[in-house]
Amino acid sequence: MHEQTNEVQGTRYSPTSIRATWDGTGSVEDASRALGFSRAKGYDLARRGEFPCRVLRIGRSTRVVTASLLRVLESGEPEYNGARA
Picture (cartoon, rainbow, N blue to C red):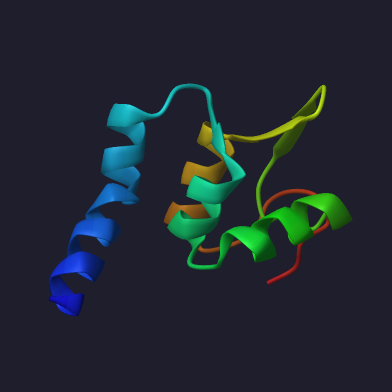
């Protein structure tokens, strides 16, 4: 059962799936899962300015730019906010 859950979750956060289902921005929680770390770690990195892709602060909301996330997923290299490999 656990393998099946990981397989479905991996597909949900694949670049192809993200392109098909996300708008211009996504949640920090979903972007963190796509990158392979927890929600808490994602928000901590965003707060410190170290999230590996572009993050927007809109009022009290924090959003991840989908195009930036896709570039990071496809290249494996962080591209924004002073993040280092």
